[in-house]
Image 1 (cartoon, rainbow over the protein chains, first blue to last red):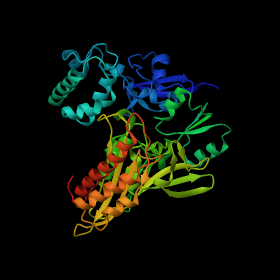
Image 2 (tube, each protein chain N blue to C red; image 1 turned 90 degrees about the horizontal axis):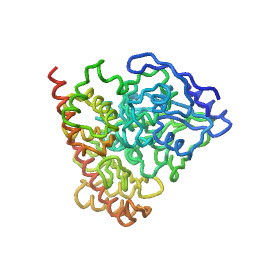
Image 3 (cartoon, one colour; image 1 turned 30 degrees about the horizontal axis):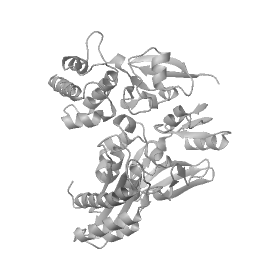
Image 4 (cartoon, rainbow over the protein chains, first blue to last red; image 1 turned 60 degrees about the vertical axis):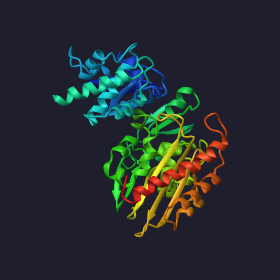
Length: 158
Length: 287
């Protein structure tokens, strides 16, 4: 069976790739395109480490086929900083020590940005609910929630 | 494995009926991709239905709603008019997995996956939702409660697709709610789920009611005996007690590590009563 040809937009850039039908978008990002910022945790949609947005919608890239990306606009962690300037969420994660091993961090940053796009002033509870699909086994979550609250505060001032 | 993304229902039906081997519909993929990864499901053909407009749109119609079967849960949650009209359905949808999973998961998939613990199903049964089905022999309609016939099994014939759900126009003073019991607050599978939908008359007496239970039998159940306990009453303490007793009596649950049989039977009554109390408050215009 011939490989599938897919044209999509990733972090604003037009991208073309070939993939097998069974390959997930996560496999394509990491193995075909070298975008290894998106992490594989469970591979079954439980941990959120592979979170990306597709046409602005937050999803687990392990639960999407590469071929489904045809014509779509995908945002990954690689597109979050503007060159050398970190996104406020990234900066606040560093300031609040919202990470230790870092495997969950790209997924949590993508998920948190998706929340703040919809709700610039979330409560702590809203943040915890929105991030319930992102597992972190290091931090105990409090520092992550503090970082998101602080980033939201700063982004509202701008 | 072949992948096709037809743009019309007709093309999708032709693909399904022309398939030689195992063909599967791909909507949200949140169950299918996991099955494929585990090697439980080995399709020869995947038919991605997300390019079919009638399956991916939400249409308000004569006061009711037609929901495409492949609309994502997050789209439904974010649809203000729908969420306002059917808060009990939204209760169920909100409990399906994480935000990420809801970004992909669909009502059609939740129903056709035929898990007895599917959270949207009792809520949709209580709401008296109909499904539109297209197949090689044309179109038909069915009730949501008649689709799942056991774990992983549906009454759909080969080559049939659920294209949309139809929710009727709501009468004034109507309210619905869905509650489930899980050991954790998020990201868990229902041990018991209860959906209640009711309508009051001007004097506050219950005119109509529907009660549905999930995870207490081999499929979600419509429980008319529990609804009968409410109809004609003022949904007072005595009526709610009768509702709870009827709900518990309808259960024929499994016994497993997440909940014993006795526990599920008891909790089904409690969940049904609490869901009815929320539905009542909503019918009275309070959230």
